[in-house]
Image 1 (cartoon, rainbow, N blue to C red):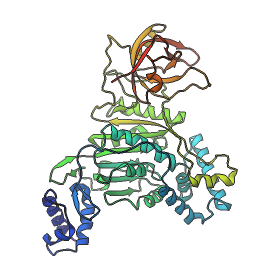
Image 2: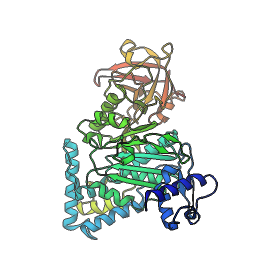
Image 3: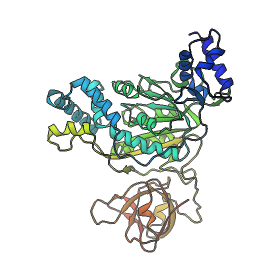
Image 4: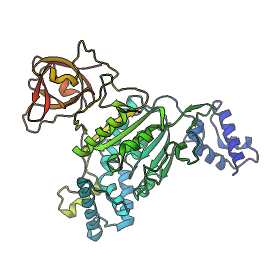
Length: 489
């Protein structure tokens, strides 16, 4: 098919899109040479995102919804059966029906052990087919759950459009890709690009093959450091990034969402890489960085966040919102969220049982650190404290042993290590030079919001006692019967 035919199909689709549903059986009659309706349908599918069209079950095309994405989400109980079966099929192709036992099972278990050990030692992992399968068995279920929680929150906050362009950097075996695809309603449009140089891309490609007609996807087998995010959505022509809204207007530039999922620790210069990718965001686009909850990677995420956000060109949307203008944090901030465990996937149980059923190859924890960056200055909590009312955490040394009022974001779940110990929560206001921990010494109806608030919620503290904890080299914000804690609006 020549370009003239394709352009005629596009032109007629643009003309008729707001008149009536586009039927390839009708549309082909308006095109010179009358190409087969199947050809017209294929062109409409390929051009759907640029034309702003979604395909309906009857094979016709109608204008896609505009505005913000709305999703239904009530948590993640388990890794979807259909994805698990696809992974099991890949394992079966590799090691036969008994892939989890005998020599093949031993080989896979040993590789997963090696992956975990290298991770703990901060060593590079060499990706081949077996490594990719090991990641799919051990990490894909929890990566899927993590991504779905965070993406659902972004949608709930109105940060994602219904016609969504996504760049998934270091996409791996597909946790964010599958989570995003499952979140989208049937009438949403997804233009998904993955950057993944390793054998994990083979697993991802297999999992994406059954994507619906309103999902366009492409995998770029390149290193994150070498891929050019400024090229137009995977095209290496070097032209400006642009999107045709379907009515002839170019109404957006860049990606609506760029994801760095559990990859920052593998980059030689994560901050410099993020700098380049931030520039490829749409004006109202979002960059989401995810990291495991362990101490080293979670703190490294905050370090990179500070270099990219507090030094420009981005700003922090959440969860570590900078409440005070022109202030940046210096605290350690080992901050991560935690959600309920998912059910044990069958494939993990099959791999674990021959090894004694100790749980060594079961990974159902949903714990993660994350950072949401934007370039438009938007913040999850658009609040600026009043120095006449609120004390900044940066000045904590000046009011030790005093009772003060301040605003702070809840940045942990209960960190108390001993049963029966006072509940303990990490706080931040974006100015803190040293970690601040809220210690709940006396519960009351006036301070119950400290317990009940979600991770990332903004809290108002009234009459809280500030003490220095010499053992932890941190400030304790004592919340007792005289302290009022409310969710701030």
